[in-house]
Image 1 (cartoon, rainbow, N blue to C red):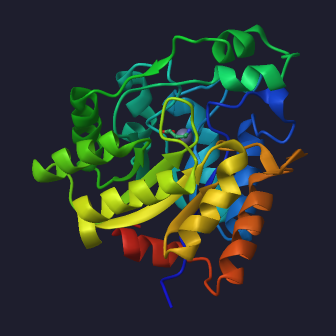
Image 2 (spheres, rainbow, N blue to C red; image 1 turned 90 degrees about the vertical axis):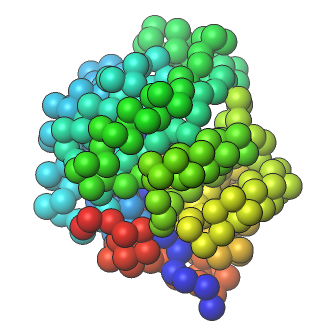
Length: 301
Ligand SMILES: C[C@H](N)CC(=O)CC(=O)O
Ligand SMILES: [Zn+2]
């Protein structure tokens, strides 16, 4: 039987906005509770962003993470993964600061630049509460920038503190970018590769897309990598099931989808973790503990 499944819960992110779902955690207290609940539901890793408690706008200042990190650690033995993606509108210097300051076990790292098509969601949410939501979601001109220089800068800034990475790959080009850094000796296994599906600007959510990304990663990295998947929006659970059925790992959470199923808003990331666990256990597997995730990913603990 294949290894236990590492479940990552992405708690709030910087893509969805407060008007979209009341369940989206915004304040530090809400983010802490959501992360602890997700850990208790079976997540071994929580992926964290911070927000302005008043407006809900993304906040990438190290101070914004202060009331979140210690409080989670005091209540749950879960692996902390701090975003370096922040929001697409931020510079790499801004985006790397929280992980540089807090030196987590894991940090996310987008393996390339890409068009970020958030506007697809706008049609479903005509009445947004905050102007920044409309400006942000309605923007057809967003590029998430992470050049080879930016990626090198993030690696150099964080690796000295023993932080390892969740390499976010939105298309096969990003897998080749990661292979480039591996060949250059800048990164080494075990490489946690988070393949992202169904976000406009990246690869699609079709099972053929998943097979194509997995086949390419298998060829480029062999047993040097640990495979995980992230399906955006309504693709979250079907993509998780495909991965779990093939020995892979999964990421769920309100950052990636506000839905539990078609037309049903998820009451929490924990509810999505529970649903993913049902799928995983239905396949005869089980969720990995934080300790098992640390061992498999060679985390500093
Ligand atoms: C699709 C996800 N929002 C990817 C993400 O989580 C990026 C990051 O924080 O570095
Ligand atoms: Zn993120």
